[in-house]
Length: 234
Image 1 (cartoon, rainbow, N blue to C red):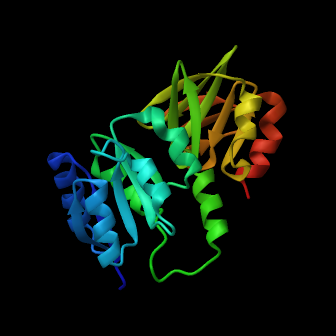
Image 2 (image 1 turned 180 degrees about the vertical axis):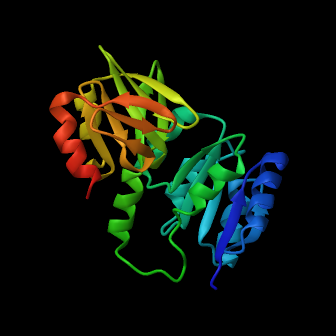
Image 3 (image 1 turned 45 degrees about the horizontal axis):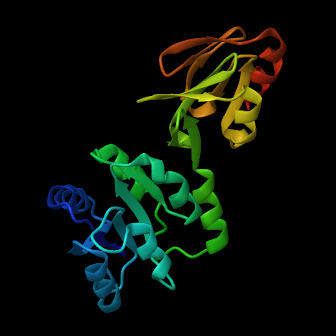
């Protein structure tokens, strides 16, 4: 099995150690080198074949995103940082994923499962498009919160706000359900009520009048019942 060759660029020793340990747990990943600055990272890229960079944003000297912009053909990149407000900038650079510190192993695993393996071939433009579609940025107060689409269980409309729920968090953003629905991959989500959109994958049970989503019972609106039944019986 061809392994994904990884480079860590991280100036915090403990954070670098955590990512190193996670890489060691997965047989399809191989850690090539750990660097503590962008300058060291550039040297490592020049002497090694690297498929994936775990990149901290706050590095001494040149910053993480500026470093990526200097590379002619950068490897795939997963950002690791304590600051979520930079997600929008990373999104525009085709970052594979955006891990907030402290990073737990399940979230790490979800990120690396998005990485295109060295043996896989395909349309790079198509791959980048898919990567962009996997994360939606939601405005909560003054912050931009990145939410992985596949982690959304259901979305609830509350007047001028929308609650986007995952198994681990709820993001309250000023929007409407209709506006949020336009940003979703429609095949993965179903409008079941004037106030609810649900992820098909999160549904554990359903009837004509209700659904169970991640342990929460939600109503099926009368005008949506037939469409919901047809969708779920496919």
